[in-house]
Length: 466
Image (cartoon, rainbow, N blue to C red; front, side):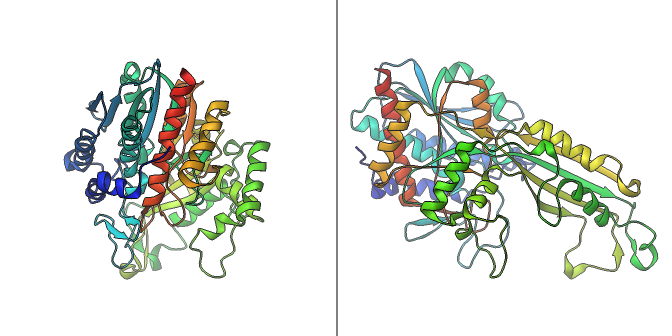
């Protein structure tokens, strides 16, 4: 059934995708002046302009705006099949920051092609999604294949936890209509040889905590041993959340039971692929990974609560470090949550742990944001069959099913609004794609395969309506 080729994708999308890759449209969490700086606006205008070139019979391209919120690109494609339901195809255009210096010859905002891979921030996470969604629909109509009404929804705050999305979903309620199928193009893949379907996503709590002990820094010869170290107090507070020896999270509110089906799926993946999680990580020689088996590492990445310290403040770089007892230490904590944990209850537990009975009565300030995880509902028989055909047609292999360790707040939001909707969460974030890290990369054949698979699934949805 599939006819979109790599040459087709390059001709139709690659120039504009590369232009998008050059735009530093950082998510609001990383660019507080996003509105004034105009990078998100440049990106949404670029994608909207490209969307208007798509070859579809009846469609509308709109940039929806709400006061004080990031814009949303909405492309509404009218049905060519008798159907009252809507298929929503989701992606996002905001980006993570560069993180650090990229490898020689690479730059976060200077797209570089090496073979069939394109390197730039945001091309895989999640710039390709607009092109994949609309090219899939263009392929269907070009071959006379029927589809239901489709809405391509591209938001601009996902990397900040989608704080603007609920407001847009309220405003777009009538436009979305009766959502029957949700296709999310922002997820991962364990390999590039098949369509990978995400069965669960972890939730997240981000905590910004500052421990203060002085109004200004003091000579360590005068103050140390008298004034408690803000870093030491922070260490004590973090020990309430995480066991420093094992890395296990202590707070019961951050734990849940792993369903048996997900345990069995992890074991099956480990049997077929071996220690796939360990292989994809650029671990230094000799470093011992957590987890006692390949399947355990899969479950630890997808169902275990974890703590990562993703940022520090109040600590000078080594080049300018003096003998000073610092007045404060600030840390940004990223706590990944099992898919079924209530993120707000988890956030409350984290705040209590960090701010109750603080050692030495140090001053602690904590702010948090939280987003729920998600677990896919059972697949309808028609969708399970469609995914099998889609992966076989596009890749020559049956689909893979696995949980992901990241978060896509949109899925949890939509699942609450439409409890009976069918979901397909998939994407191109496979080995060495480096989402959020340096040297982010889009594998072009994978993007083409996902696009063709999406076309197959959308066509199957229309057929089951007849």
